[in-house]
Length: 352
Image (cartoon, rainbow, N blue to C red):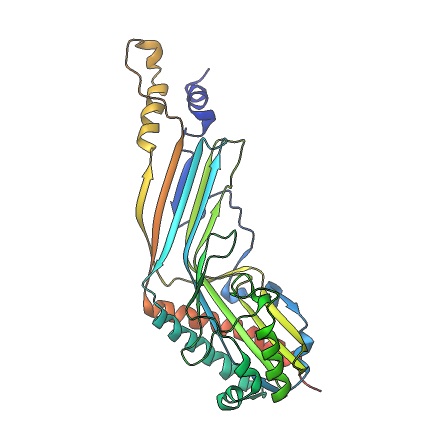
């Protein structure tokens, strides 16, 4: 039997032969098990969106935009294991250098681009005095700003804000980034009332960015190795990034449509990924592997053998440290690209 076979057989079903549990920075580990595809920002198209009831956009040329939702993933992480837990890895990452004031400024930047493009379509964009004076607006229940949530069964913690002068609004269908139950219809009815009273479409876009794309081998009973990987950068988040629009003739009932991003979109870099912590037993494993490879148990049976590791583990912590100018540029690029697609749908669904 070869030395390599002795090594694999001797150490946890092979899980530790080359550490078997490795967190890698700056590249995707393989195999990746991301649920969504990755596309570059310049290649993003409506094929990357799911459209629901776009025909609602043709109901009227008048438009009210009472809110704009801008979000950043502030914390992310992923774990993997193999061999019924014989090898395990865990990776945590935080976004640093961003606060609520900066996020509201970025929200203003994105909102201004949306309004400018909306006016360029020839639609009538209602002024804030008209929107805020409507009965429907008075009935709205704003979400606390900033709104921070870790969605159920999701490793990400997301912070969402609106521009400083706009309320942060959510409705039930905007889950998982909502503070409202799907059965709570107050805001939905208030938006319907606004639409009916002002004879307008109500639009609320949502733009959410992550600072890392994580991948991993998952949790496996069989197969010894486990791996996770982190690719730093800014990425539009599927599902969380969407465009909602509503129209109603009466407050109790109306129509709604959505454009929902389905694929992860790579925007660019906005800072630097730095490893801030690492806790593992690689040295212990390598000492054992070196002992096994040397065949010392045959050549020197009286030699004191090192302790045989019972588990391989590797835990890492990272920070994505933001450069404010790069972040602003990346958010501007992401907003322009997404809003450009939205305007295409708006132009394709014009009132008769």
